[in-house]
Length: 375
Image (cartoon, rainbow, N blue to C red; front, side, top):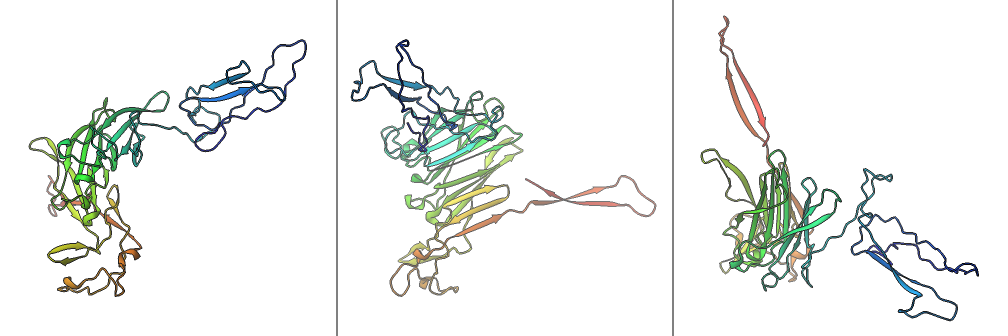
């Protein structure tokens, strides 16, 4: 009787009806509520007719089931509806989902090209638990509903990776009919790139392009790929276990007429610090790279354990006596108030010199322009 938001989908009927001697039938109405929710499967309710003291059995003719077929009418198109700006709801499922898959742990959507992704990082794939997968949905052009299209899993099955789909990010590059999808697989410290190209296939099919990894991240605790973000031709991959974020750029080689990905550029916070104990590097935990967001020339990186009241000396040459612990033996990491680090890339400046083809009687004039090129 109630949908998943706890709202009744129709007004209950509970009142007396009287059969007159001249009639053998009665009519009543079921009033449905305006909730704008697409119901799948269709709604159903029971209708029971009884007299005081006498209840019909479930197999009797006085006990019946009624189904309200939605036919997508719960999904209201505000452009055609008399009620403007109605919030639209739709629920999607993985047709092969099982217990503990945790589909929806991470999601990404691009309305412009009609594609949506839902990560299930604990899903079992090819009998391997926690291998992970990503379910791809396309928007139907007529109904506006999301339809399950395909499922992506790790392109490196021989590495027996885990948590594929722990992070997802997608972008659309306008004017080039190109969409770039990035999926993290932190269980083996990888991030995978997929491309969708062409005016006909844009957002419909994604093909594997490249896998990113770094030599610094070699243990599952390093978590390279736990968070990813893509904007334009730039990808950022977080590795909070080693307090780093890596930047990749998609560039064009004019000689070979091919696109390629640049080597990783490593970013750390301005509070990056570590201890060396028994020849082991122990980072001061900030979880720098736990969250990442790219937009145009700005990169924002979350570090929820930063600003943690580090004790000890902060002088060059005193690296061995930095402290993560206070004098009472309590971890100072627990006092982390967190920080957000913002990086910005200034546009490149090109100097263009134009020489005049005419010679004037006073001098030869040179014109100099300073252009800010936006990439």
